[in-house]
Length: 526
View 1 (cartoon, rainbow, N blue to C red):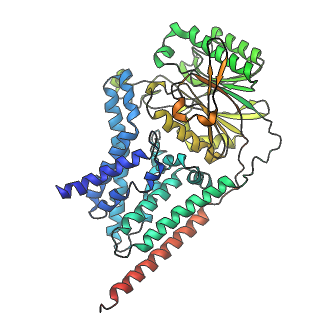
View 2 (view 1 turned 180 degrees about the horizontal axis):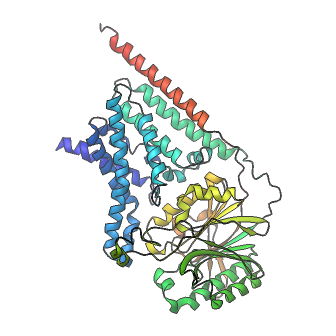
View 3 (view 1 turned 60 degrees about the vertical axis):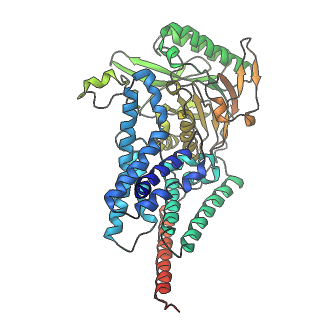
């Protein structure tokens, strides 16, 4: 009984603790020790057992982290739970591969076990998970660190959140290996020093004056956000189209009357109906003329000639003209398209599809500024945000609709994805969500949420944004006006060279440590 508790209870414990490092609890510091029980027990066995232990930890972690997917039971019935578990199992198999490879390498090269092994393997695993098939890197360990901005800054240094995951796994492995040694001070000292350097370097990056964009021609931009908090049932029912449009217009007019804005952003699929319908376009045109603001809204677009349907973002100028349309490029599997439906037609009865992918990312002009739009699931992909920056965007907009998942932790987790896209690119990011959490990030990942409530009489009730936490914004009908922060100008960082230097330094440390242990073992006892 005791042996089974150690073999399989400790991996379960690691999975639970690691899930608590993410929202809703967001105890980010747990990530730095959560994997120690798993690593410690895996080190004591052979590769196949380690693979099983890593799989078990991964299954527990993903089942808790992605519990919000079970909310789809309301739309798809019990199949939603089966689909959630199949995804958790698939992701956990990646963990199992890391555990097997680590122990296999240890046996293949005995006496050379270091903490770098699992850290590098984990880094590679997350890189693959974020890219192959459709890509689903939602559970990357680095996303847990959004609550600690000094640590989160390392995503800008190496250009990707997965490097933070590498550091987290490295510290966990050092602590686990230290438990095996009678002279564990050196490993513990290295782990503590590493955490200290990570935190202090990130803190300096936040405290020192950060050079903003070198482009002095960037004009100020006042952004208005409307969070309508519409339930999914209402959004799907054409009976409520007029109600939805009237409410969005009313909120927008109230906001623009109180604070003149240059750009108003509505969430994903906010405008009801098809972009080609004049009954939809005319109110939007009139709204932009009356407020004098550019409008960026989510909308559907039917291409009847090509028999295609798109999930789109539409930009209307203050003169009421459609000046840009972006069709979502990276679709969400099972929600916008059904993988393998050609071979398994029965899937159409238990999943959602029918949306076609756009051809390319686009950048739209907003006055003298340039915006790069991303729609919902696309916020998960760092290369897409970086590509928009390369195309000339000086700020990003993410429009999303998470009404599918109610008051689950999906909203707060998705917000962390957006935070890291802002940090990685150094660009301010406007986050517009139907049911929350809407607000604006600066290029360092600092966030200000919407905080104004529109009364029925058309007046605003204002709350201090610094008194509002993101969780308080969920499911609330709110608006907000923000001064768009300037981009952060990052000095280009040639990371392969310092990473190679770190690996060499670490290898020197391991060799020195083994020599010290060897000399201590050879020393005659009195």
